[in-house]
Image (cartoon, rainbow, N blue to C red; front, side):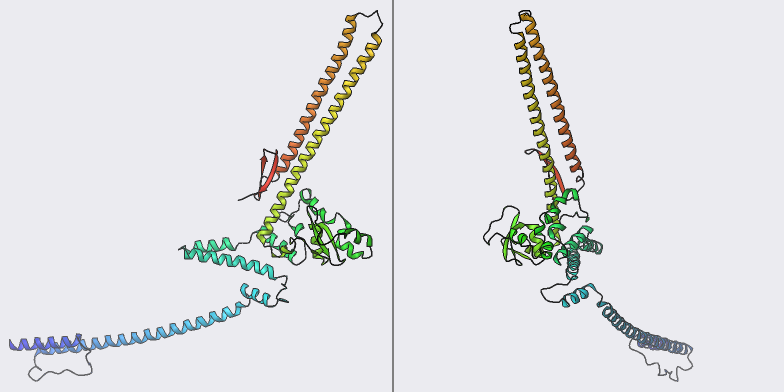
Length: 424
């Protein structure tokens, strides 16, 4: 019994050593002489030795795993560093071709600080759209939006529509003296020109050949043309739709249209005196250009409608005058015929009073019928004129019914159709 307790105590002690602190498996465990021939002790000893070997193997595996993990972390760190270096090289390689760098180089290479190259304005316009997209993207993210919503906001804000591109190109051509502002705003958003609607506006540039800078430059000895135009002074007040211009080439002052003034300014031949209309053109942006273009289109449509209305009213007036004249002549003819009849009947006793009355009645009935026929004809003509006018106006209005930039409404107080800018 005492032996069994001793063996169990020894086994318990060795098990605690196995699962407690690390066991030095290099030390050999032996039995005292009184236990060497004990089978139970021998079996326990074998199990202890086997447990020690297991522990040693586990510790070796843990050590090897730790070393492999350490080596793996070192490799991972090394690969990340190489990747960062490669990405940096890639960014450096493509940085030269990025839009920001192109814009930066363009601004640095401008001939002068106050002189922009032909590429500066398109690049700045594109940059403004990109920056607007970036700002829209950040706003969505700051408000808790997801990546898809942020990308959609960027695409919408950074998008350059065809109409914006056409307006931008027109504006840049104006800024670089390749076109006239008042001419460019006559074109539609798709770049097409409506000659019937805006041809009159375009012809204002060349109504007077003496006002054409190219003519004046080509004919410097045409003193009459030079003198006829310059008869003003700096305090001159020009009539409506005209501006006062100082002609640098002639050292005089001229009242002329904004169109002519714009041409002179573009040819460095004149400077506006009383207005900053043309000087402000260079500072206008694409949105302002589009608004001016729509405003000009609305103005030209209203002018066209008003022209149709005036033409119709003139036709009405001419027609009424024509028939009033016919009625007046008809009344004179009736009185003349009655007078002739009275002259024949006076002193003629062979004709009774009843016959005389019948002849006079016949004349009056004839002219009454003629007057009625003429009145009916006048009504038909007026109705035809009204129908023609209505058709003309409706055809003009119909051409712009699908135009999202404006809307045409009926003015009850005028009453005619009127075009106005759409608020949508």
